[in-house]
Image (tube, rainbow, N blue to C red; front, side, top):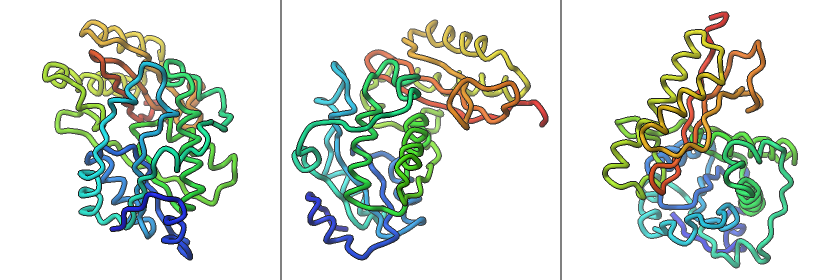
Amino acid sequence: MRLIHTVAELRAALAGEHQTALVPTMGNLHEGHIALVGQARQAGRPAVASLFVNPLQFGAGEDFERYPRTLAADCERLDAAGTDIVFAPGLAEMYPEPQTYQVLPPLADALCGETRPGHFQGVATVVLKLFNMVRPRYSVFGKKDYQQLFILKGMVRQFNLPIEVLAGETVRAEDGLALSSRNGYLSARERAEAPRLYAVLEAAAARIAAGERDWRGLEAAARAELEARGWTVDYVSVRSQASLLAPGPDETALVVLAAARLGGTRLIDNIEVRTGLGV
């Protein structure tokens, strides 16, 4: 495995490669990231993982300064997973000028975008830069960040990029909690409570699968259950998988998404589900 810090060295290492697979990350890796690397290695080679804590996707008062930087440990994990190249640029290498350039659809201001203004503009900017630097044939993103995955697929279509975006399934702890780099912020008590987010989404998905169509009622019930347990809920929302908008009357492929804070930690999760109509 090679550890590379500059774009010039990266492009030299990838010269002549046409099946490169990229996994963009902010480091502090867990098994969910490693699963994405495994998926990337199956899709194409060489497999490249990027490690960069992107300041443009953090809002005022968020955790950019304290976000864990664990380069040595991350490189050990990536080496063991068979990663060919780790690209870990510095801030000046990534952003000669600290600007965002992406104009995104209105969806970027909904769901997570409503409480994190500018977040997806920062995400799209850094990913487009990584695409230009690595020039991958494939790139893998996890379904846990469902809205991010949807927006980045749209960006690839909009710019006609020759990249296939692959979706990795959410990796969970035994109690159902979606793995996240921010789970380390949770206290012992909060960690014990955290799987409730997934349990609440499972309950909503089960009702949808059984034929329930009262989306607003489902969302309100899920929110009330979380708030009764001390969560601060940003949203619980039933959306169309195809558009991430409110479902139409005939849509059957849906996703239930949620973002909520437990103490000072913001957690997100989602479940894809099909309605009971016509099944």
